[in-house]
Each structure stands twice: as structure tokens, then as C-alpha cells.
Length: 299
Length: 171
Image (tube, rainbow over all chains, first blue to last red):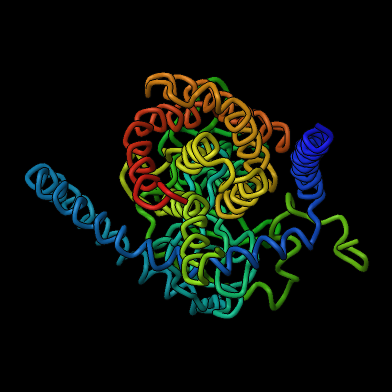
């Protein structure tokens, strides 16, 4: 009788311990959220260390997935071969016209450069990285890349696909890094509307088409205008193409990026050498400015 | 008689299977699918893993494993640290607490209960991220994720049940 009482007490105690452990884990989760909000260096280091550790695994399993995607892509391409051909013929006609114009302008530009003794832009160095992790779009638009500090990737560097800007590096580990897409809710980039030279900030909101905020002056922005990066903030070199204005309804201007996220497999992380003149990390991402970068940040 | 070293090791490895399977589900969700229109919609597979094991083998996927899987989820997905940890922890706690209700019930009941729990989980997730970013997020991808998750639930439960039968029937 007495023994069963002791067993009962032990069971109660164990239950209590379990409850206590559960509650402490809940508290720990909330603590992590608050610490993460404070942008502490230690949290970021932990994040990058863990992504480094799982990057090889993700890299390995994303390869067969890429092959499957390629096969399904080619099947789809076969299905609309005719329509695609007709479209390409039309586009080719238009581009031939553009080529003539571009050649003339190029020649003119060369002459003008010579006249004005323009200092040419330096050729940027770039690293090609593979997208190895993508956890969907519900809570953020970012991707893991299989290149890190070891390969020369630095925080704040621009990431391009083809010629267009798709985002920038937000976190760098040793062998992996996180690409923050333009469409992410945390991405904010100084841009220029090409035709009117209107300055604005392109801010993502987790939708496929990011918004144009803080439009300077009194703009005459119309659908179809090209949007390119601006030099302000020294974040990115000016003139990288981003997308075109997709809609201007109800005072909200939305931009359709040139590159869709499902098309991304290999991307170029580009070092435009701006870091040599300016401390690249700090002005690049004003929204990720740290409050405790100096001593005692991890305490 | 004490079991031999090999038997104990075998048991030990088998006991790692629930956590291992759930981690695999997490890695599967992280694969870039590159399907137009579908690249943003990702089923909540780790949630299903946690739910299943919390009901059928809560001893092998305890609260702290759910917490760790959630943390890893946050790190891979780039969500604020602690959000998925909290959500998976809560799902584990609720499912394991109510497991007596599920044992011996039909599959439809499990599906229905998962529907409620997953909706609550997705809602909490959305709310936490919205509060942490101090900006209202677009809810439509969350709803699509949820619907896809519900659609995949039978298939995944079947797979997990087969796994359990194959490896954890006696241990």
C-alpha cells in the first residue's frame, strides 16, 4: 500500500517535471523571438553555423530535384513549341530593330566617351552559386545558396540572375549564405524609374510584385516603365535592371520583376567593388542596422 | 536477462526513426521545386510528422525534439527564430495530450483533428510573424499551404504508418 503511494507520488513528480520542461521550452521560444528581434550577433552566428552544417545535405538532395524539374520543364516546352516559335519570331523582328538602334547608340556613346575622357566602370567580380534551399513564400522570400564567406561571398552583395537584380545577401556563413529576394518583406532597395529618373524605394511585401514607396517629386509613372537600381545609399551600382511597372492602381505602384522565383537555379553573387570605397555592409541594408555592433554585442 | 549490445543498439537506432523521418520531411520541404506557380506553395510536412508521432509514439518524439525541429525549420526557412519552434512545440503538446482520444479512432477523425490543429498552427505562425515584423503579411500563401497540406495528409499518414509498422512494431 505504502509502496504504491510512493509510485504514485513519483508519477506525479514526473508529470510535474514534464510540464515544467514544456513550459520552459515555450518560454525559450518566446525569448528567442525577442532576442532575434534585437538583432543580436550571436543569434545570427548560430543561424549561419547551422545553415552551414545542413548546406551539404540540402545541396545533395536539391540536385535530383533539379533534374526532375528540368525534365518536366522540357515536356512543357515541347507542348507549346509552336506558340513559342511564333512568339519568338515576332520578338526577333522587334529585337533586330533594337539591335540597329543599339549599334548606332553604341558607336555614338564610344565617340562621346572619348571626347569626355570618361573613366570606365570597373568590371565586377562574381561568384556563381546554386540555390539549395527554398521554404516557400508564406513568411518570407529568401533562399539558401551553396556559397559562403569561404568562396568570397560578403553580406550586402548584389545577387543577379542573368542581367537583372533579384536580391542581396542577407546572411553569410562559411559555406552557405542566405539570399533575400527583392519581394521579401524585409527587402528595401533604392531604385530609379528609368524614363522619368524618379527616385523611389522598392519595398517587398511578400507578394510576387513589390511596391514602390517614397516616390520622389511629382512622378509621371506609367505601366511598362523600366525600374533600375539607383546609386543612392551606395548599396548597389546604378543601372541594374529590376523590372517594369506593372500597375499604378489606387496610388499603389507595383513592379513586376524580370525574374520569377521559380526560374532561379544558378545565380551570380556580384562584387561591384563598392566595398573598397565605402564600408559595404552598413549602408547596404539600412533595415538591418544593428544596435549593438560594437563591444558587448553578444551579452 | 539483459539484452545484448547489438539488440540495444538496434533498438536505439529504431528509436531515432521518428525524429529522423520528421527531419527528412523538413529537408524535403526545403528543396527548390522550380514549378511555375507552385514554387511558393509548400506543404507543412514537418507539422504532419510531429502530429503523427506525437499521437502514436510520443515517447520517441518528445516536446524538446519538436522544439529543436522547429528551430531548424526557422533557420532553413529564414523565419524569425522561435516561431516554428513554438508552433511545433504546441502541436506536439496538444496532440500528445489528446492522444487517448485518437487511439482506435478512424482515420477521418485524425484527418479532421489535424485540419483543426493545422489551421490553428498556420494561423499562429502567421500571427507571430506579423507581430514580429510589425507588418501585416499576405495571408493567401498561408491558405494555399494549408490546403496543400490537408490534401497530402492521407498519403503522408499512410507512409508514416508503414514506417512505424516496419521499424517500430515491437520496440
